[in-house]
Length: 302
Figure (tube, rainbow, N blue to C red):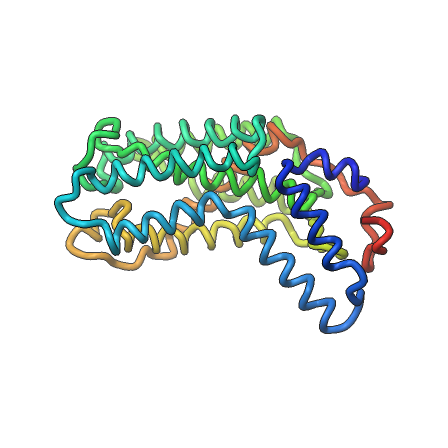
């Protein structure tokens, strides 16, 4: 991918930030501890930029837990919904998301809300019964928590120029996520297929290697390892959000308790759903050998 091609994939604001960052970093050493530290810093900053929707929403949830006054004119859940809407509007207004990416975010929002309606009805978890901006027992801000995951997925694809070796056929992955989504509902009534579905994920993606650009360097990681890492961070965010009272599992109703690691499987499977949705907008691309050398990429290539 040429720099012109990459520029076209970035939003206007991201393009300006990218050019300013490259001007700042141009001339930095390509080897040694300093080069390594720069690559690490760029990776962390790109990840933070990709997480901006979810991070802002989590900050709002924690702030509401700490400082929202009892007896306020507007219920806390309604305030969270208004804040989530404003964050989404800001993402578009400041060109942090493109129009076609919004379709993935909206689809994830709708599918997440449908799951919330079902899960709260069967008692898997619950929300405070307050506010008017809700559907049944589900406050509308809950859908934005799913949308935040979709937002991260589409943004990280662009920011790291993701490329994949031996990526499975999209029709196969689509069929699998349909089964994954259905199992979140049907396991309450019939056999839980999550371990079979987890095995299917391993079979499909085990050969896949993801290549992503930090700054000068292109790194390679097994796709399944990347999936596990993303699921881990979502689980950490879940612990923060439940501590902040965004929702509660039955065992937390008497007071907050740590969300156990068994939830990692659920988040792993749900994250697969978001990954496949992103491939409907950004079809997986194979590596480009000329742009993917073993060592550092010369500055001139940028």
